[in-house]
Amino acid sequence: MKVLTNARNLTLHFRKIHSRSSPSLPIDRRSLFRPVPPIPKRNNSTSDPDPGRQNLVLLEIDAATKVATITLNSPQTLNALSLDLGREFGAVTERLARLMRPDLDGSVADCREINAVVLAGAGRAFSSGGDLSWLRSRGPDDGAREGRRTKYPHVNADVMDAFYSLILRPVREILPVPVIA
Image 1 (cartoon, rainbow, N blue to C red):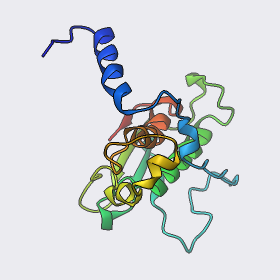
Image 2: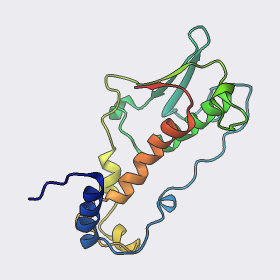
Image 3: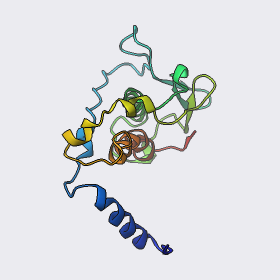
Image 4: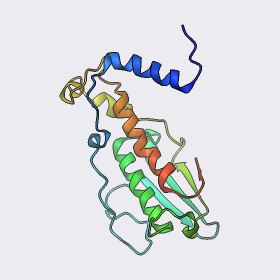
């Protein structure tokens, strides 16, 4: 086995391996998930617009310490990252960013009243990782319908990559303060 010495060789090696099992058609990752519905404007309220439904993600802001806490709230599944939880996490993160910077012009100097964000999990676990029941629910025909050949129909790297970017993108790109998990 050849030792890969730099990032370029590693990238070329990765493309060579994965080009054998996947077609050359580009995959539009944005089409894998429906967009998050817009959040109605409220007076800095963090309450849920639908009180009959359990929030999968909670937002609390402590004015005294200037710390916002985002809590994954699905303790019965050990806060497994499902598609619904991912969408709600993105919506809560964008809501928090709007509270911090209503203009969202990208200037960190305009950050208001929040010095850090803490990610927490309800119950006895922070998160057990991806929700495997969702992945198993993607049947063997799903890859074929989307125009891809899949060797393992239940393990789809493109879908998982897009899913985790749904969770990680808001943390990396939207929030202008340190985020602690």
